[in-house]
Amino acid sequence: MSRQYETVIGLEVHVELATKTKIFCGCSTSFGGAPNTHTCPVCTGMPGSLPVLNRQVVEYAMAVGIAANCEITRCLKFDRKNYFYPDNPQNYQISQLYLPICRNGYVEIETPEGIKQVRIHEIHMEEDAGKLVHDDWSDTSLVDYNRSGVPLIEIVSEPDMRSAQEVIAYLEKLRLLIQYLGASDCKLQEGSMRADVNLSVREAGAEAYGTRTEMKNLNSFRAITRAIEGESARQIELLESGRSVVQETRKWDDGKEMSYAMRSKEDAQDYRYFPDPDLVPVIISEAWIEKVRASQPEFRTEKMERYKKEYGIPDYDIGILTQSKHMADLFEETVAICPLPKKVSNWLMVETMRLLKEKNMDAQDIRYSAGNLAKLIQMVEDKEINGTIAKEVFEVMFEQDTDPEIYVEEHGLKTVTDENALNRAVEDVIAANPQTVEEYRNGKEKVLGFLVGQTMKVMKGQADPALVNRLLKEKLS
View (cartoon, rainbow, N blue to C red):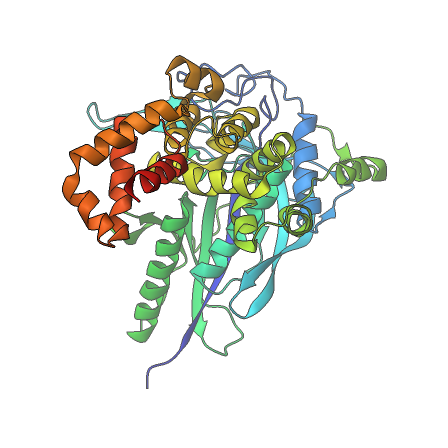
């Protein structure tokens, strides 16, 4: 009988903070931009340049720590982590080793077995490195320092997770907390949230951990899931064949669905950490902590409870709407203008979600305003336009945040309510479809839908389907 194994997983999650400027200088943190245009002597490591700490970085890190039930360090300092790499301009990284800003926290995740706590060992602040751009054509590597000095927090968990599903639940919980705080957009595809996976396997029931490997900078939930499953299977296969797992850093290739060794970790690298001499210690007062705590937003759990009481919409709707703070804010702002919560929810959950999926966008990328969505819904309610035209207008509004009232007016899309015009259209359709009319009169009522459709076609979609339905029935009876 083959042995049973348990996978043991801990994560190091790097999150780029949503400050306008970098952690130690005034350069822009905006994503993109021509290479090396968001730089200055500080973030390119020029001799004699001096870092100045961005206060907002400390507040964001504190806010995340409070949301994750951490202890806040009252006296913290920064350390230099010394290593050479081309994208590291100073040949050291300013980070925190000895006195990180947050320690001993936890977040709760939902698992098939119930609620589980994943402990957080620490959260520390540090600066990001630059980016190497490899040019295969010229066989050279170029360095872009735009990202150098962008503020990061690193959230280090304890090895409390046992499956890819638990890891994804933990990451989704962290992402929602951080997005609701406004501390980061947590866009994995843009690198503002990245995860390193530390994984080992051991025989079920064993107390000692197995030898772990680390997989670096995974930036999609799909890649993380496949990397965990692939690495777990690889380690079990090694142990089953009597071989040992080597402690090393591995790179996951999602295209080939396999990992390969990058470097051995049998001898821990000596980073020669020492306190950064250019940055003074930061004293965090109780008053500062309370100020940050008081500004914490309503998180998803509380929001879900309130929606149930305040809006009376189904639990399913609530679950979808609150998965993104931007979506939840848009829902609330729209309902404040147009108090039809279920109608607002339907537009967000059906048409909005469909277009987001088609265009491979996140909910936080929605550009249209609550005011314009409210106008569109009210126009349908007032029968100024019908549902088909509303969907057509919505697609334009989704792309350009177009005012639906102006768009409908300019394109002549208002519903035709002139009964004389509708009567003429209905009579033309009846005259053009004698066989269908005969079927209807012989009791085949389903064909009425075809006649309604033909009439809507004649009216270029600008009729009220209910009115067309009534007129057809009157003429055919």
